Amino acid sequence: MQTLIVICSKYPNPTLPNCVRNLYEKQIKQSLDYKICIVDSESTDLMHYRKVEDEFPDVEICYVNNKNYEYGAWKYAYTKYPNFDTYILIQDTIILHKEIPLENINNETAYTFFHDSGYNSDKGIKSRGIENMKSSGLYIKNLVDTDFRLAQHSSFIVNNKVLKNIFSTLTIPPVNKAGSCFYERNFGLYFICRNINTINLHDYMIKINGKRM
Image (cartoon, rainbow, N blue to C red; front, side, top):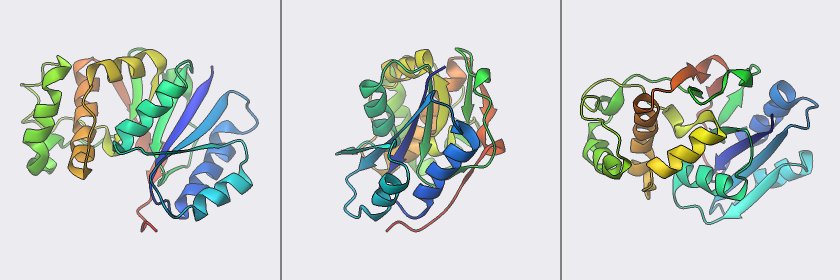
């Protein structure tokens, strides 16, 4: 099973090299079935990218003008590499602390970071998030006022078929920070409406809060 690990990054801090290091130590090990691709979003300070390039020469860093946050990074990587079996999609401040059993992934099962709060935890973005979903064809009316499960950090692990369907369903990318926030909800709504069972990534990864350079 071939797995693409995509890391969305912007103005990375020292957590990025640790993120990559832990992926190698705890998930990849000596396997040749993985590729790591870091998608940058117009960073000007490249110091931590240079550290990654020096320590991990097999990691590909894509210096692209990604203006669409996590959604844009995931779509860029999928467009460039559409034939992997599994996609691990994470932010650059997420650290793996335990190997993830990828054999659980299929058309009906994915990994996400659980956070059961829906739009209720950020009502200021609710109307924009709902508007963004109108073209999706998903029925969300009975969910939008509930504490539905987010795909927190817009980070998740899915197979090829599911990721392809995500991009054919959620077609309007975020263009600002508010959009990035409502996409945590909209990715979550996608998994619920498609009846995809989710496993909690909090059991395997932790989010590190650190200052951007």
